[in-house]
Length: 173
Image 1 (tube, rainbow, N blue to C red):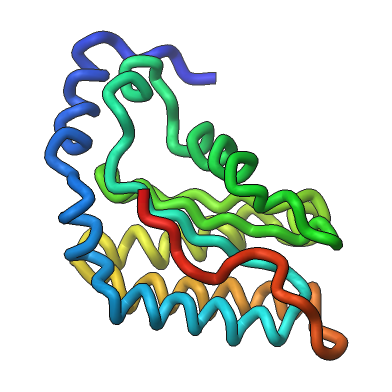
Image 2 (image 1 turned 180 degrees about the horizontal axis):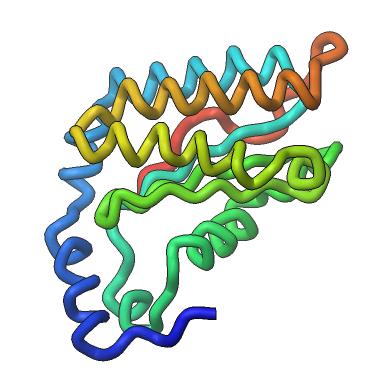
């Protein structure tokens, strides 16, 4: 377990969050990108039985920074808050993007988590973070969703038509 961040470390961490705004998130993910992401999720979900949610958060609140809320902890909170766990086959997958820190976390429901190795999740996260470092938000997100859909198709192939249990639209916080 890592040691809690010092006051000054938290101040340094807060700076990118103070600079990151909803407008910056919209610039990184304009309507055309959000539509392409929604389509990629919808098309992928026709090939497997899992459900994908993407949450893009421009920045954490200062209170969260000073309470030392980490990316994984925030992802777990949103996983519960948005009901990603609430799928019939326990196959919900959340991709959480912290835009201020350019960090990505994937949280999977128990059925999915049992079958997919952490290294496979990390590879998908790395696709996004490496692309984000170069400003390629649209392309790297779509590449990551394609890789995730392929992984889910391998472990949870669709067996015919199925209802969509979670909305496919990305959420921008």
